[in-house]
Structures are given as C-alpha cells and as structure tokens.
Amino acid sequence: MNKLRWRVLLNYWPNITHINDLGSAEDLILHPAMTKSFMRPHLVLQSEESCRECEYFHICKGGCAYEAIVGTGNRNRKTKFCEVYKALYGQIKSDLIAIGKKPQS
Ligand code: SF4
Image 1 (cartoon, rainbow, N blue to C red):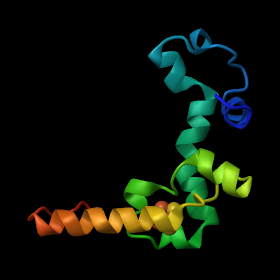
Image 2 (image 1 turned 180 degrees about the vertical axis):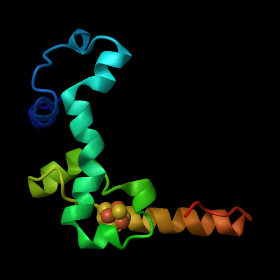
Image 3 (image 1 turned 45 degrees about the vertical axis):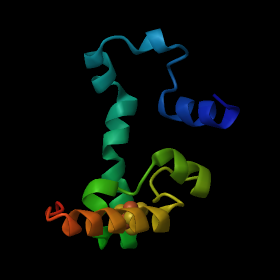
C-alpha cells in the first residue's frame, strides 16, 4: 500500500496500526470511524448539489471517499470521477433496459 493510501486509511482509522486491531465484526461495525463513514452519504448530499439531484445517488452516494479525498482534500465531497460514474451507470441502465430488466430507481 502506498503512503497516500495509508494516510487516508489512518485518517479514517486513527487507532488502528494492524489488521488484528480491528477485532470482531461487531467491534468493526461499532468503531467510531465506521460510524463516521456511514454518515458520509448524508454529508455528501449537504455539500454537493449535483448529487442531490442525481438519479444515481441511491447506488453511487458520491462515489469512493478515497477518490474524494485525493481529488478535493475533503471526504465529504463527491468523487473526482463523477462523470465517469454517471457514464457507467447510464450504460448499465441502458443495457438492463435492453434485456428487459427494470433498473432500480
Ligand atoms: S454520479 Fe456524480 S453526481 Fe451522481 S451521485 Fe455519483 S458523484 Fe454524485
């Protein structure tokens, strides 16, 4: 893992120095960093008008937090690859419709 990834990871998980520090699945889900990460979609919606209006927010939620930090320095902003995500979701939606499936909305 490169230095930037470690820095981002430690930003989320400041008390974790080894994978064994995570403990059980219950410890993990109750860890303050996890609680914080679950709040990210709500914080993205507050800071990104385009996400609020986006038809793909229910599946995208602003994209990858790591990409947001690298691209903007702020984990609560949308991913710098927003247009790529939109294109991919649009293509998947078209493909689903073409085979007679109804995409989730
Ligand atoms: S595709 Fe772009 S605008 Fe839509 S939810 Fe994802 S990041 Fe936000």
